[in-house]
Image 1 (cartoon, rainbow, N blue to C red):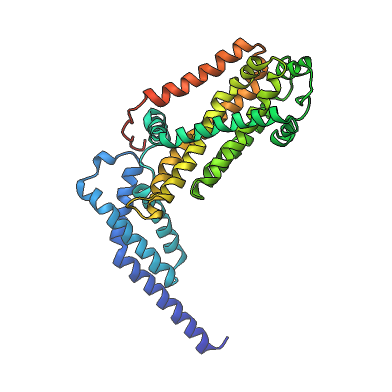
Image 2: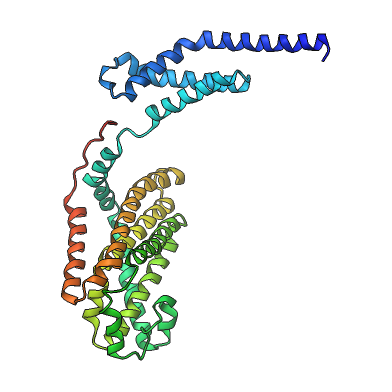
Length: 347
């Protein structure tokens, strides 16, 4: 490399270093003040912050974010960029991030936020419940009119011994005597994944103005009606209801709420009122997302009940007690718990 070129490179490096130093000197006071405030907050010393510190926090955050943008565009030194990126990330979390710890969020969620969100969509719950009843009745009547409908309405995994023409003893064998079935935990995980897929699909389709959830709810319950018809033909209706109720009161309740949440979003988009479609969908989506968080919890409980309790409890009265006890628990929570505790500060 020639001497003039070398001197030119050295001059460019020196100029860049000076520019970086000048940039830091002009703004470093704001960076240091923001870092001091963040340090106190991260150590749980929010009470020691002055009113001026709290008021300046979002202003300082925007100032440092602007500094980071300028530093990136002007290709300042890597150390300055790394420092500013770290500072902006910490500030973003404290300014815009969650205001409560995980424990605080759980207390608020189970302390009334979930139940309040469910009660807020009660019109859609009534519609979804009506559709599920209709689907069950339609499945029963179709199979009663022509048994070939059973093969169209019932998924393949249930078409083992549970088919039209099966004897009472064969059908009884599918309901009882499975306590020693291996790999119950694997079955529980599979059932949760399957049911969660149905519920999430039902909710997600609500963005198509609520029509697909209506069809999915009916389709899901036609299977239930078909299987009830099959066992009724051998005088096993009560035993079948007991077999289903262990997990079904929780599982079907969860699917009901998921369908209602999807309908709520779809209805808000179809009839936004004074809001724009996007604003109405966003508002409904916030409420529906709380409902769906609870739905996933219910489905996890249903998966455990279906994978373990239904196999281990080998009598109809015990299954009915567990199933309808769970239903009473859910109904009691949604109807009686109305208070929403205030958000907790980050611990």
